[in-house]
Length: 227
Image 1 (cartoon, one colour):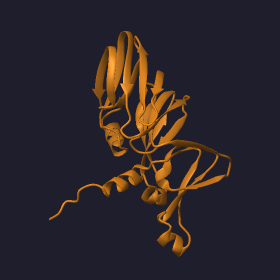
Image 2: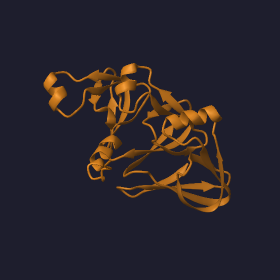
Image 3: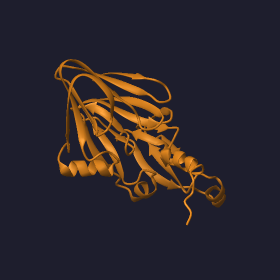
């Protein structure tokens, strides 16, 4: 995939296609495009796969964009302020992402549901039991709210983090939930009852703007319904 990411706070990405090349995205993901492009919308992988994607925050149907002749350019935009992060995945290489983070990918990339195996991580991990799993080969673009920090964990190294700040991680990272210690910490720290523990080896991508925090902040300024 040939692409160019533009902007800072509210980025856009121009995906450039040659004749015969194609990419896929969730329905409604395209902002504008030029060139001879054919759109094909379907339940990619079948109905059950589509239902799984819907549970993971994506649309039931996916749309493929195929350049029929010449050159074409398709622009995609994120839903909230943040960063568009590209991942070059080798054959069989996977990345686990938060719900609704997938943006656009090569046709060769597989998008599936990832289920949390541990009850603690599922109930209290911020994203619930259902995440997204992207598997190569190919390039995938992911949208992450806020700024992005990449942490490379060594074997056995542990990172403790508010679950809402986890944007993506490699499957080699062990993800679990740990209860906050100390009554005063639980009652007065404002950090909630649980922290996520990410144990290496592997990479973790952290976001500065959890959507739950943004929604809570904005809700203070929303008119309240009465009656």
